[in-house]
Length: 88
Image (tube, rainbow, N blue to C red; front, side):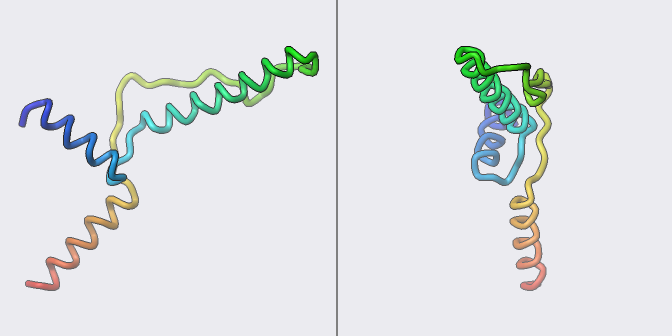
């Protein structure tokens, strides 16, 4: 299997919800940090900010992507494994 084929299949399984990527968690953390930063800057501009929020933290971004089977993916496999065992 070539790398392009692997990447295509992995992306398709991620989009369908059968796999979960660690990048999803990282992106969510970055998004929440940006929202907190925006909120703090708006308060600072209005003169209402007293101190930096505890929720405002440095997001940890991993270099390596970790992929794991989602709960939906497990259910999907269990369904077809059970279905094929009943037919035998």
